[in-house]
Structures are given as C-alpha cells and as structure tokens.
Length: 199
View 1 (cartoon, rainbow, N blue to C red):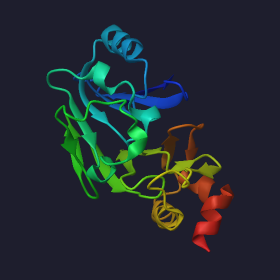
View 2 (cartoon, helix red, strand yellow):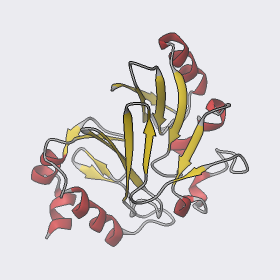
View 3 (tube, one colour):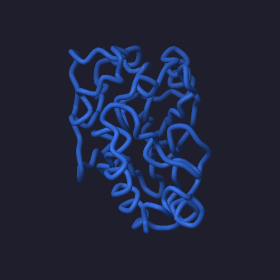
View 4 (cartoon, rainbow, N blue to C red):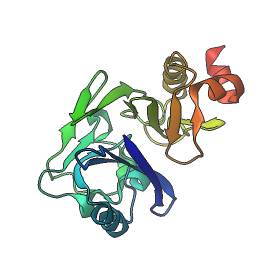
C-alpha cells in the first residue's frame, strides 16, 4: 500500500490518497475540496481512482466529491449521515452512492478497507482501517476528538466510540481529518478526552 496526504478545502481537511502500487488502483478518503488538484495528482501518478470513502458527511470533508466522480468510481458513505444538515449542499445526493456500515469490508485488488462505525461527531461517522492504518475522520485526533455540539453530535456516543478504538493495537497508525499522525497507544496514554471516556 502506498499513501499520500493532501490538505484540501476551506478548512484544510487531510485528504488521503491510497493506492495499490502493483495495479495502480486508487482510493480517496475525505476529498474535501481541490478536485482539480487531486485529479492532476492521480494523472501524474498514473492511478485509476476506484473508490471515494467518506468518514462522515460534513461539508468540509465532501466538497471535492462531485468533481471526482466518474465512470467506475464508487462513493461510499454511512447512510446514517445522509440527513445531516452539515453537508450544506456541497455534494449531489441524487447521484449514485454506495453504502457501508459496521463490519463492511471493501476490497480493492490487494487492499481491504474495513469499516468501524464510530458515531458521536455525527450519527454516521466511521473509521476506516486498511492494514496497519486507521483513518479516523473527525472521531479521533492527535490529543483531541471531534466536536459534538453540531447537529447530530452526541458526546456519550463519541465516548463509546473512543472506548472501542482504544481496544485496537497500540501500534496502529491513526490518520485523522485535521491533525498530525499519531497512534492508538499514544492517544490512550496522552489524550485527555480519551482518558475521560475510559473512566
């Protein structure tokens, strides 16, 4: 697996490009904007975009989706987030979507993306695991967590999601929507929000 991060959109969301270096098949996590820049990068690397994975439906994470749709590209979202008002019309919901939820697994050549349902920041928030990497969107940050004061936010649900994530391996690399890389072990040891959830 190869991986590259780009900061995109009005709130500098971390958008992740993941690809199978043998086949050139590629996936994106949370393309929040800058669709043209992302298309150029795909072309430069000779990659074939096959999947767009959304960790949740807030506007800053979805702004580039419509500019990246195309034949053979599946856009994945948890259906619990479809009614979230914070998408703010930044994505055409009349276009075909694919749905995942707890326990889903999406295969792309030699890679498998496993879905963990982690509500709290939004009703349909998910984390996406691929090998030894966990894409956490706005559920878990380095030293912090996602806000729960938006429509659909739920602090108790977020705490339950954090407890679940802390059951994962310490060495698992955490790549979030807005912060530097970290690990499950580092967040268990030093994230005050995680420590509060674990009490």
